[in-house]
Length: 235
Image (cartoon, rainbow, N blue to C red; front, side, top):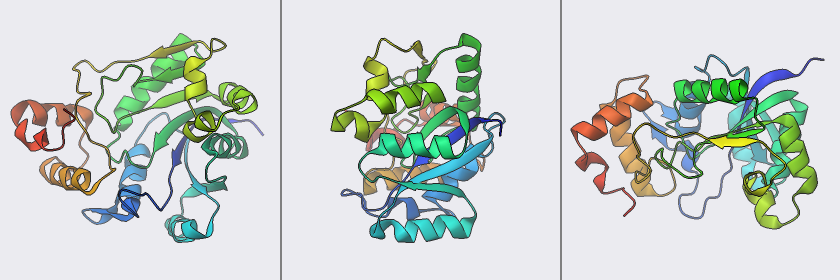
């Protein structure tokens, strides 16, 4: 069977110490997780979306939710997220993997597609947009070839590399890689879902922005009214 080209793999779990069950928090009628999945599915270049979750009893509720939604999923090691990613990519026959985390519900499919175009045009092994950061926290993105992920899985030995997936790729001289930047540096903004104050901000923003808002819509709102973002900004 020919490998599917671009697979978005979302890592998700229950049991966050700071904001438990955060992926079930609502934006309108959608949970945070389904809000993210539906946004990514609007990508024109992603062939499939897979949610990679820990295979544990405490994540059974998440598994059942994903199954009921009809989303693709893969169950793997709870702490070795690198292994979970590699095995999910292998099972779904990915050629390129787009790494997204479930605490980034505002990801923009147009930004992802632009990153994929750059990744393919440059013929590289790994692309990031956070090393150094210029996009808001909550828009972190990595794209890697399956072979890059496989070599990392085979080579990474320490627990930090296994838990966080990409540090070995960022350090290694084996891989050809680039980092892309936002036209306007908004790295000081927190648009991630990690604490309840994050949820309050994201919920407020989702209500102010149009239905299928883009990263450019966020920039426009920020320029128009910075105070909306201020209480949740990294100082």
